[in-house]
Length: 454
Image (cartoon, rainbow, N blue to C red; front, side, top):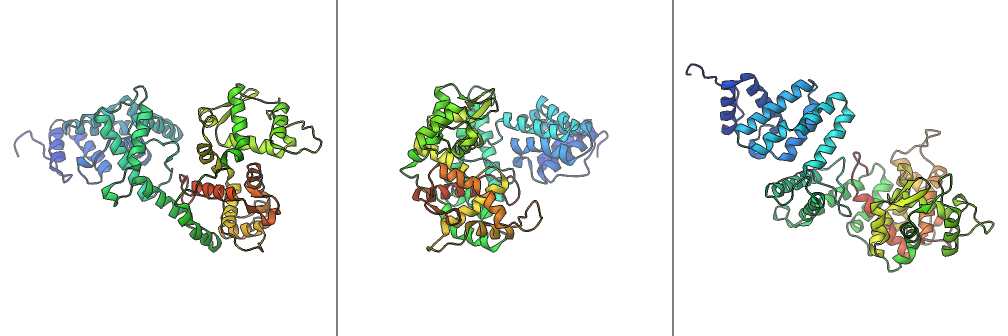
């Protein structure tokens, strides 16, 4: 070894990286050691060709501060050294990401508080252009992902990075988010030879449906197995959709035409609005003169549904349409059906679980002599581990009967139940079967927020 030269004792196994580290060590051995450590943590032994901007940002903005509890100064040192290494490797976009103001700010947020760090990371990822966006009406990425969905996410991120590098859109420029959504949607639905002719969206749906069908209890498992094949395909929108959704479209168009829906001082629907709904749709009252929303089951069920759909926002004493609400107010019947019907499942976790089970029973029922629906739901939920919050005992039919009330109200509002039968032996109308299919399919294919659940 010639005088003045410093040889690296450890190698990464990649000639280009080792040569760059050798050059760096000649001027700053400590920075070279930091760069080697950071590169190893980023690539897990793979070479520079394995690096993507999305993966690098994930490491800088999440894995580095979350896994290495060494403090801000050390995090900045590792990021800076990694940036120097990428500069020597002639990878300038990656070098800039390591030393950018965004990376410094995200790491500083993590140093203050984990919650601040996660918030800063999410904002930085959304602004980067390489974080695959949710595509309304097509796919919302899960907080918890299976292997297929994770591969799809990484492949989509790589595609977006290529498009940015080619100048097809520029993060921060006018209209770039819509361009990114369109690019992601196109990529996800394009058949691929490396997937045997499937597209990534098909792979995600198959994986999510399989995950949804997993059950701890035999009753739910049998129902899910019987329905899984059907739910892989959407059911046709019934021809009566416009009539069935009339209460939803009426209230949304009223909000659009009148500059918002008036509310009372207690923020319920104004009496005039409730009275108009009663007259239009034949909602019955005890006195014939409704005093408030609370007098009419259909009125407060309708308002609950549109709130959970995210199409209205309360501002003072008015309900105003959100951007999603403005789009839905002018949508055709088919688009409105697709958007609204998943909301027959309530937002409450327990009510949604009971409603899901009930719809599964209702879709698979045969014969004329039916068991009590609430009892069947209770047995199935108990086998899944549900307990009564009061007694701690396995959930019973009394509790599930109460939980199923909201499902019954929503389906009755939209004319999806045959009301000639009692609640214990409820039956679906023809459109009700299509609605049950659509709601279960949306739940099965929806994003996962926790292991084994939606």
